[in-house]
Length: 99
Image (cartoon, rainbow, N blue to C red):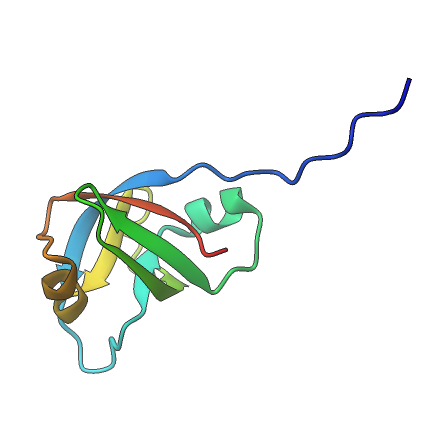
């Protein structure tokens, strides 16, 4: 018999709670927990965000640098991007590494 072809590991989307922020240098980059990035086991610098009504965005991603916010299953999204996606603080979104 032939060996099974190795399938690429599919990373399922992760559901995170939105925390919006306004910052002078925030740009369009979002922040998520370093542990989530590590669990994806990829050096991805972009992620895909999808709202539960189907709106999507590809964003640059950085680690949350505020230790008080780490490990809380949140994604920090600039206020301007929240308005574009029509989401608010406390909403849930699906997040996964960009293809």
